[in-house]
Image 1 (spheres, rainbow, N blue to C red):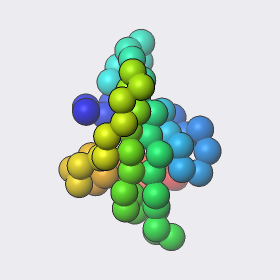
Image 2: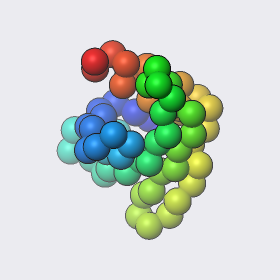
Image 3: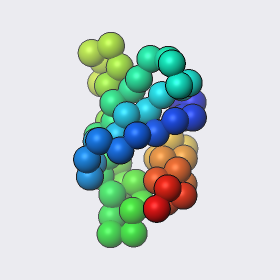
Length: 67
C-alpha cells in the first residue's frame, strides 16, 4: 500500500488514500503513548489484512508529522 494522504477519523481509525480522488483503505491501528503504530489491520473492498512493519513505520511518521 502506498500512503500519500491520511485522514484521522478517530483515535484508532484512519482513512488512507493512494491519491486524493482514489480508493480508500480503512485502517484500525493500535498506538502506544508516543503515537508509534504497534499493529494494525487494513480493509479494502471487504478484505482484511495485517499491516506490514514498513507500513506501520510510514503511518507513525505521517501521524507524528501532523501533530
